[in-house]
Amino acid sequence: WITFPRRYDFTIDPDQAVSAITKRRPDVVLVTSPNNPTGTAVAPATLEAICQAAPGVVVVDEAYFEFARTGTPSALDLLPDHPRLAVSRTMSKAFAFAGGRLGYLAAAPAFVDALRIVRLPYHLSAVTQAVARVALAHADEMLAHVDALRAARDDLADWLAQQGLEVAESDANFILFGRFPDRRAVWQGLLERGVLIRETGPADWLRVSVGTPAEMTAFTSALTDVLHLHPAKDRA
Image (cartoon, helix red, strand yellow):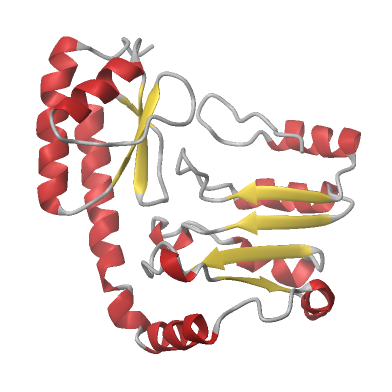
């Protein structure tokens, strides 16, 4: 397993990605778009370059794509030209069905046929399948909250930037923000005020998931207090 570093803004440099693929010749290339924990979506031109360079399978994980901003392209658009490309999605995020452990993918027919050969028998319970069918039948209602969550995410990103913080562009249901000389102190300060977020990802950064209006009010109030004690680094 070989990881590939992202740029300062958490995007992928296509030239460096192609160079790494050419050097390593991997059987499988896994790309997350939007990425966790940064929330960054991968540009279509970069995905195209990766698909062209990869000698084997390319899997684009779009677990958070339902939360993407309007106009953000999906790797699904590349499927007609790339028979070794697979795009995976999940019902764990936007459908709030994480307990079902249900994912799916889109790929060329020959790709799917090959997966059927190696797929484990009885890989989904009858209950999971039944619940998923009901959820899909009511997809409009199930996904009605997504637009509101995206709007709340964008409002929160604006607010964080107004506090002098660096904010990674997000196409997910969370935001990565920083940079902090001591992110553990900021995380602990929030926890002491009853707010628990993720201390994950690159050093100096924290990740907050977008929740209800009441939860976001609690977060912004707590963070305002904490920033007085533990200011962020000056932005370059």
